[in-house]
Image 1: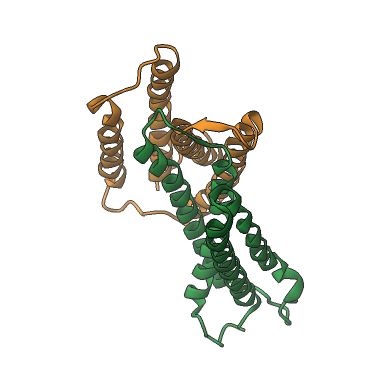
Image 2: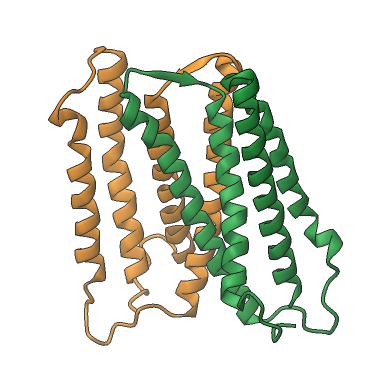
Length: 147
Length: 143
């Protein structure tokens, strides 16, 4: 498994771990009707920083000094995955901004937290699309990728 | 100046003009008729749409090779920059109201399409500026 695949698997794992956190936040807001206060409101930020730092430390480490950064095939795979990610972001963003407005009407109002969910949700799904596109192109779990 | 640069210049001029004219219009209307109605001035952002006429105005470059690997790389980098900055715009547009007003506040639904439209304009503008920066603003050797 090469570095690009490891990055993709890390992204998938991080995104999947985030889903229960978001589900918990939604349940808390709408079922329990409790607004997080104080540290509870800001704890996702240190978690996010831990994810970023871990990804930098783990992903940038080479298995051997001779391991190359990437070759032309890796770059082409990444490029195609980025294109898929771009397209999915614009479609998701159009849906996420258009559907609520259609639902409440032009003169309606939306809760501000919806904006935060749109931002994080679209980013998370885009990350998943990118990672899935990378893994699908390499062939999931193929052992021949040792560059 | 090659075709990509000409189209990029058209986008930069059209979007800048649209933003400038609509800002003035919103400002003037805000003083005259008040704030919700002043958003009608954003209609002038339609000027930015003229940038999309680039492929029709500028014909394909003459010669057998109209695009090489360098052009492709420049376009890729510009697309990446445009995506990064447009999503930064979306992030700020979503999180600033959340941070200032708090999670229990509500805002008008009209902001949602504005965020989407703003992100699109930022994407096209940054893409064009990135293309011009990489080729060099006035470089004549790219024809």
